[in-house]
Amino acid sequence: KQINFATRINRNHERNAAGREKVIQTQLQSARRSELADLQGVDHSVFSEIDALHLPEVLALVGRRHGQGELYVALKSLVMGLFSSVNMIECIQQERDFHAAKVEELDAKLATMKEAAVAVRNQVDMVFQSNKRRRQT
Image: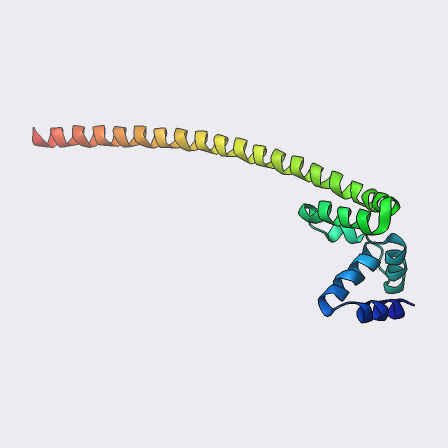
């Protein structure tokens, strides 16, 4: 059934257009996508593999070619992925804030160590100068 469907599309479209049409007719239509997934033993959403920047265009294509029902099915399968990417943004921002605070802490320690090194160097210079004066007299 699926092979006949793909062959019919190949006959009715040019080479490049045939590939696009097969994706539109199979992967962007939930019933056919489900049949193909069962045949292949795949159980995840094709939408999870689409870059978020391209989702509006893909969803518009689903709505235009397959109607509101398919658009609703597509949106339903995308909701959790979109929420997880929003949470990922917040997670990365929190991690960035943590590391920024850590950098500030390390900068403060470094400044303290530099001040201590300058103080030690000043003491060594004073001792050296004192010893030098003793030898001269």
